[in-house]
Image 1: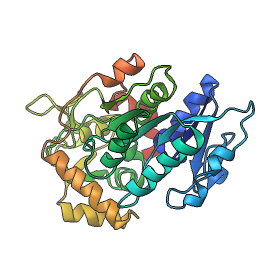
Image 2: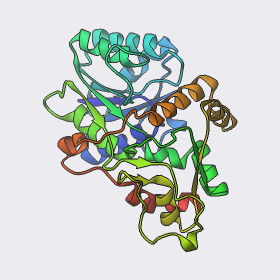
Image 3: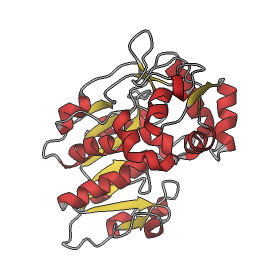
Image 4: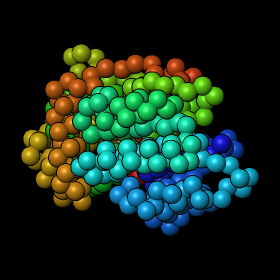
Length: 309
């Protein structure tokens, strides 16, 4: 058994690779830049979702003990419609190389047969292969990358169009832990999990208070929901505030930080969905699969606080 990890430079694939490496399970990271982009001492191959001539390359890789790829972790490319290329690769991997299991990562807004990779999910079911779909909420790691990283570090601000919406943020490490089981457990899961964090969080801060006057404990809104900016303020020891933006302002802000327009519009739309209550719930799917509760945002901030220093 060997496992192919697409999105080889991504937040979850690199963490999943480390779990597989520690467990002694052969794996191969697939990315457009191959070995030049992935963590050192990890095997990689050049692969491009939009170039079918690269589809066979992972299967030509020589594993140390002659293992064959039997499972694939699917991360969609950042294009407006990833479905044709993803479904074509699934068909190729299953028909030509006998791949038996596929694990698809997507967002909580995705439904089977619906928009974006919802049609990839439907394709997996219709092909009757072993599968699992991981419907993950907003990543904690988003705060360390692109716009959020620089605005938290340099401005003390978090910009969103999420309004009063609540989100159960999840760490990439917890997503990787669930994916590890979905890919390696003897029995296929053949289901979809909603991969959610342990608490509902709004982005808002206690308005207008300086750090010196802020209470020493995390603040909560009227519904008992903790506030992200407050957690960052206390975790970093300085005032961090949430700045509310319109959908149009979010698209512009994302683009200012290098996000392609189609991706900026998608992310902004999802933020508006959060403001409207999409994803306003928690569950125990992570604990059921991996045997422990997912990491809290407080603990994650403490682990990563040097990023914003």
